[in-house]
Length: 304
Length: 225
Image (tube, rainbow over all chains, first blue to last red):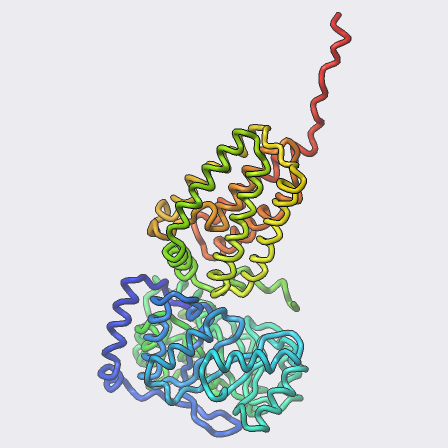
């Protein structure tokens, strides 16, 4: 969910900005957290996605920019980074970034298993772990429910053995909610990951209430509908009520809409920009919209 | 894949346009001076076409398809797109098909002098490398015949159109590649997205015409009256 393509010049500026982060972060408001329902562990209300943005291959400039984003994310109080073996080089780039960032001690490492057949899962998970360079993952999710019947036993066994902390499943674009609902009702999963934003609100009717009922944490992907919502509001003036919520951008307003839902644990906006990661994390501070205000946000975006 | 109708092309895009075009920049930098060798091979192809030496042309094309499979798809593109491994396999298969058709069977008679074929070949050699500059990207991101898959595929289509009889088995993979690359660029909203599919459509139409149109029979010389 890149807000805008990053030019080489912008990246140099971003890298320079990242170098000044400690000073910036002290001036920021503390990022708020929400408890993972099953454990009570507090997670910052904004995470970091990596779809497209961190898939930069072996491009040194792209890798440095990704490291700068991660450094900024941690400096601003972020913890959860989410990836997948499906995202090309993203996991390798994250591994390099958390090593070079130097401030990733509170990382909450979340990735996915994305391969047909349960027997192929452990090898892929181990490869992902090597890419990340972490002793173990905090969260492993079955990507897009692919072979979930076969992968979940592996993940539950890893959790029981202490080599994994949480187990989850993912969908996106509002797809396969019937199957997701069935898994939520029958499997002892800790997390789900779904699409939820001001334009895609299919999850509101059944999935989010069920997550609360079953004490399942909710990671929200595509908070800006893959960047489309940022594009759609680019020329729209920010409504005056945004200031009441401490929002300085549409992105912050849309993130506040998502995290105001009590079932949501954290959205995971992805970006290639240090300024945007700081802006995103700042949305997890201050006050949050109530129901009436959420309706006003929908009306203002034009998705009510 | 369930609910497949809800997917759009952008759901399958794994990288940003910036990363994609930087890939060519870094690739060009890494393989230099292979560009000189590629230009020499292009000249060798032109000379061989003039001599109707289909065997040499096929051998050179096989080399550049193999190069693309290894140096571009496997070594570069696969770092940002897991599907590149399958593209590499298709490119190796294309090299083998060219070797089989042109070298083993010596069945590449390039004497038709098709204007469309020559135009496509010239487009791949001259225009396609300039597209990066024309659309406002740095020239260092140019895609060169022999080194990059798009101009290699279009040049191959052009050359195969010079054949007296369309060699469909050798046309299939370049045609498919033009569609794949067109869809990738279209998803990235690239201004040059339609070029490869248009070249493929042209090549397909001409090859189909050659296949379907009744061949000209020699005039019966016995009825002169």
